[in-house]
Image (cartoon, rainbow, N blue to C red; front, side, top):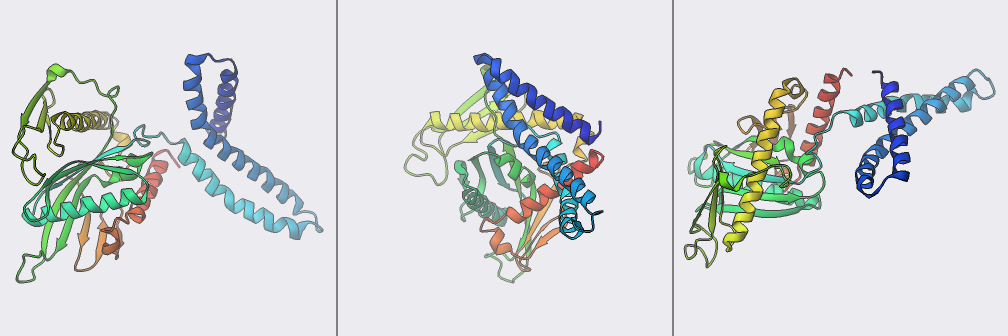
Length: 351
């Protein structure tokens, strides 16, 4: 189907939904209103595109008139040059959307190779994402933070709430590598360490059905830094989803009930993402149009402190501003990843 045909069908559907809303009963109003709210930005863009096309054609016709040529020429070239960008924006809006893009997200960070240095960098990276979330106006809730002895983390999990969080952060999943001289290094040698980052779309109970009989729930005493309650009450919770083998442990809260609720939130997200990954594997052709797979084993980025640079290996982007990135300024990287992904998906659609 050609682009003009797609646009005609889109405008026709928007008219149908508007008409249906006039006669819809209570049960239908919600679904129709939601569909119309999703269509309207695209309808507005199509209207602007077609108005620009019409104005361009009118200006082109005026070029033949010697008295109007000078006036029409500037308008014609301006409109002609703006149309490809408008068309690209429309094609992007027509691409199949990831249903999870509008969701909040669960962020998990774990040290991998590198011992204490990996744990320290995991804590720093977790803090950088926390600052980025604040800059976006998102709510950042620490669900679990298992501190290590030297100020790092053995693992950290956060819930990040806001519209479109997953769309922004989904390309952060993978292996992040750090190269620097550790504070404990006496001979100035650069060490390489890695941490894994997972970003999961937050799942609702309706997204994932979890049978209580499939869960094994263990309680135990919390360990590590955590205040007066540590090692005095069985507040920590470990939930094992037996069919999948997924295990989630929480000990951040003093309340066993709160730790269980947080663990279930993370468990739902992991099971939901596992199903999404399975479906994406089935649609393997679609994955060719993505910047990355989101696989935790994929090395995606290097933070080189001696050279002051951050390099994203998937798109060959290098920024010499590691200090700003570690303060939470990820927007330039995330914007470049999003643009690259859009270009790849447009190409896959036959752009």
